[in-house]
Image (tube, rainbow, N blue to C red; front, side, top):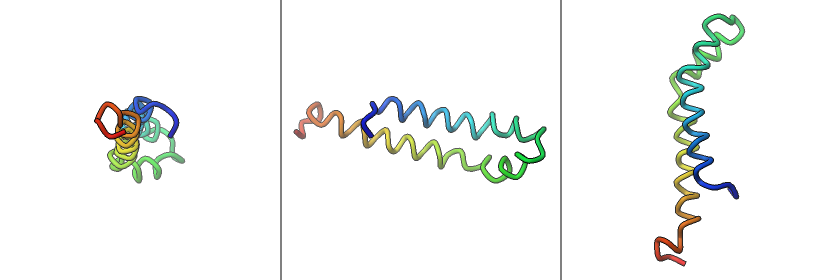
Length: 70
């Protein structure tokens, strides 16, 4: 929580790309990753949304003075 909000947004984007494209590409050829791929490939929005929500909370917390709420 002490990192800038931009880090959380970047992690959210990385989670989306990872679960949407990278994990399925790796799981298609690896038999031990296949069940994980099937389980998590449709849940990319959950993981990326969690990081984006944390980023929004951090943005508000770090910019309280800018928003006029000191």
